[in-house]
Image (tube, rainbow, N blue to C red):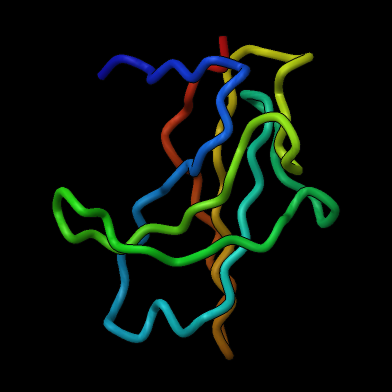
Length: 103
């Protein structure tokens, strides 16, 4: 699969599919978008939103990236990886999404 390219000037939602039961969207979700090869630390996480993909009905976590957001890569393009953190009462799930290339 080819890596999706995002122009550095764009500001839009980046989504990651999250598989789980029907109560998933009631849980707190955060995302981090980092340079390829970098793992998230506590200061990297930002509040994300839940949504449903219009094409296939999958539950997704999403966060806005681009100029004017916490994830502004206009000065540092290159490969990025989205991370998702879902907090449940007894579990803390951290998921690595598909990489993108900011051009």
